[in-house]
Image (cartoon, rainbow, N blue to C red; front, side, top):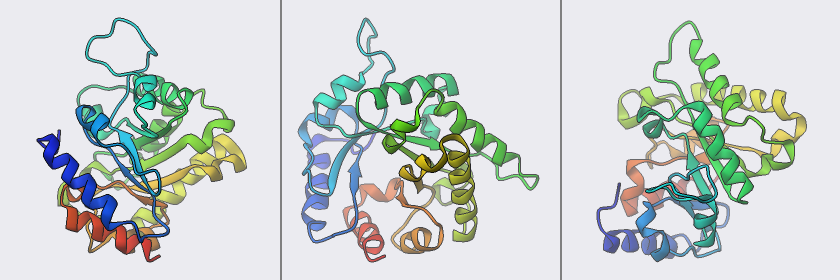
Length: 238
């Protein structure tokens, strides 16, 4: 639920759009709270608009919910789904799958968040992440894989608790890509993998370069214009 005001949201978005015009390689997706979306129209060059969630029904009496069609009509191209904070509120794999299908059916790209609470030494976290991916992408055909992004977000590494090293990130990225390859064959090459978990300007380049991921899911640093722009600058150099 950040930033707290529309003025802050506009200022942050304007700073990012202005400061990243010279960047050639990066695509930047801004995912503000619903209430700011109509006021933050995307620049439509390398800056895109994303939503933090969407409901799985296209229309109807669902007070408080927002549909994919409504988001798409506002110029939203991407939508987060299954974020760890949503899962902590009780969102199940079944609900997440319904949302992924609704987002993809609406022509938007779904950013499916997956990740374990504990990186246990016995490797049970691998089964958990695989299950989150397989369940989340149930009934998504290979023809829609280009509308799928997997954001690996190890909950134990969020907030600077324990840093995950690029080598570990690379292992998970390879694992996730193998799961997708088993599901979709060569079509899985169209899916992208991001990493989120204590991303800063100091580690962004190393994570993308050595972590075998396509990009980053940035948390608290995205609310600091200078830090966020520097993260993008570092990644854009690769």
